[in-house]
Length: 324
Image (cartoon, rainbow, N blue to C red):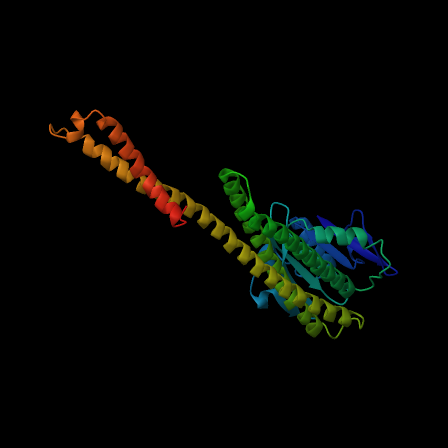
């Protein structure tokens, strides 16, 4: 899909069905999973080398941040929630006249930015202003994601530590712990992808300020400084949430270990308690002619009583030692 925007007195307008002649006057071209024809059309209109999915997915800094003939070729990882948290790459090619963005998955940030951009009072007179607005929207989205993660971790913390006072059945507790582990894994993936996107934005901003200093509008510099501070704050908050996630993971595994220890304790007590009566029953089950209790009128009752007593005594000892 190819979206093209022209600037009318600082207000962006999306072209309905852009063609080659129309693209000569655009200020921003957005390519979403483009076809070869759309890629060639954007390259002819801008003179840029349109990044491929492989190139925007490179992890080397030299591949993500490059400058060629006054044009910046940038890329950074982003977070997609389409089918669970996963990382997707986005490419930005920007010069003093035009901005080209390339992405290979749907992005709520881009969609919301395109939807609200024509309605606001902000003027978009240059490609650098559009790029700065996009980066601001991306950083805001990352902050919103971390705020949502913080709320989920708080709710999960209450649920985990409420297990100590829960009156539900053991199966219910086990199901809760399994569900909690799955949720912690999902949140861990999301935090990891947010950290990757935050790191990408933190590298992008100072590079833009340095490499495009010759043609950046004066008003963009303070916005880039604010973006840099915002990315640093997000990084600190991400670290805090990651520590809290690790703490909750350790707590969940601790409760699972306690549940397993309780099962092993019950099995141990049952085996210890069962040894004396089995021993008594084994003695009186031997086929010897001269066993005194065989000829005794109360021999059977004595054997049953002895089995009962040898069962109760270990239980009383365990109870006296506070083991049960």
